[in-house]
Length: 175
Ligand SMILES: [Fe+2]
Image 1: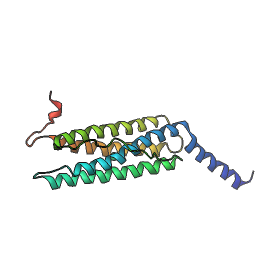
Image 2: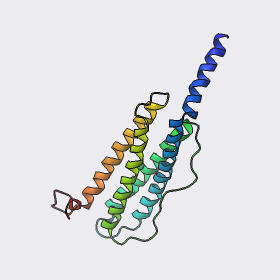
Image 3: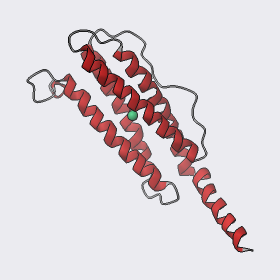
């Protein structure tokens, strides 16, 4: 075998490992759930942002729109990973709003629940990379970890918005 055909063989092997591996196939399934989840997040935050009225409308609307943009960015990053592993992106979308909201607190609580769902999916993704050392493993693990960090920071932002003025701790911890 010539040097160059040997190299080609090695490269093909590496790509095959990355696109046909069982763990990668499972990762693509989770990534597609995340793709749908993040896309729906972008839509939901945009819709929520149009349901904010009252004195603090502008800053709250601004935060929601920023989070919507972040969700869209996350969807694109997730999509890039799916295609990097030879997968195809889902054409579906996650759960969207099915009613109008009149209370900002209620909206924020819904947002927290949805953020928790996202974090769970990113954790599933990170768990897959435990004891996995084939090509793509660090890409997956680092991505999942970074996203969990971002979503957790985001979750705590929402939770702080749910506190009442002067409260140091969340009312969510009380019965
Ligand atoms: Fe996200």
